[in-house]
Amino acid sequence: MPDDANRPSIDQRLDRLTERHEALAQTVELMAASVNQLSTKVDNLADQIKELTSDVGKLTGLMAETGQFINQLAHIAAAREQRLDRLEGPPS
Image 1 (cartoon, rainbow, N blue to C red):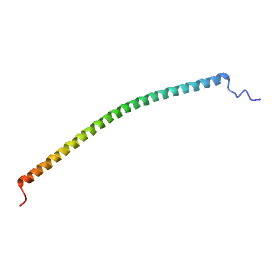
Image 2 (spheres, rainbow, N blue to C red; image 1 turned 60 degrees about the horizontal axis):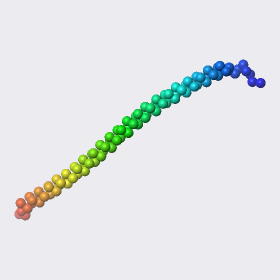
Image 3 (cartoon, rainbow, N blue to C red; image 1 turned 180 degrees about the horizontal axis):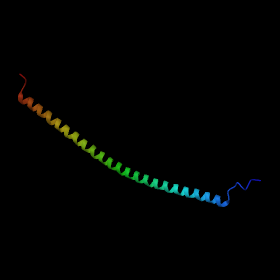
């Protein structure tokens, strides 16, 4: 037969279970708070990524326009150079 003197009483066992339950409940609350914080951070990051994506799109458009302006200036410069060459005549 097992030695009943060394076994915890029902009250002691219930107390231990209650303590464990409280500890688990606190852990779940802390985890829920952490998940909420992470969720907020993820939402903020998603908003920032959308803004950055929009900004990159705008910059891409501006770079394309800048490239077109540079090409136009290059054509103007080439036309001016040809005009100067014609005005100066052939080298002597």
